[in-house]
Image 1 (spheres, one colour):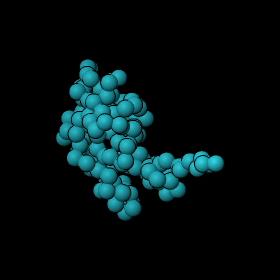
Image 2 (spheres, helix red, strand yellow):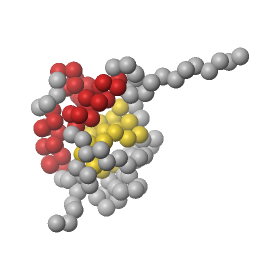
Image 3 (cartoon, helix red, strand yellow):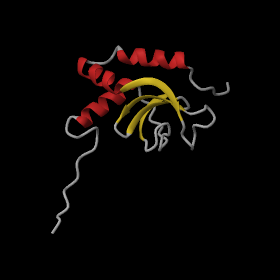
Image 4 (tube, one colour):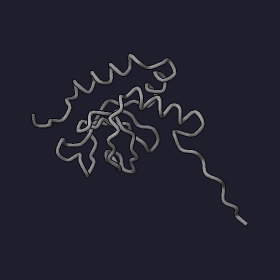
Length: 120
């Protein structure tokens, strides 16, 4: 059976199923970062399906659905509408959100602040 990209309706179903699994804190977090799904470009693998669906934005990171691998991923972006790095983690959305939530509990959106450089 040939591959075809996920439809908007099927993506919405994936999101609704994941939302059922979210704790109160994760649901609040999700509602803060989520966007209406939109197709973004990714130069390595995204051309065949006219890009990948981005479902959330956090600073310079996006959560997006990889319909080639059937899972959600987190990647950086520098230009709105363009996913910088391909990933194929095959994770459900609720697990991606939990991982980001756990990382963010000690850091700022998953990034540990670096050690200051001396000016002397």
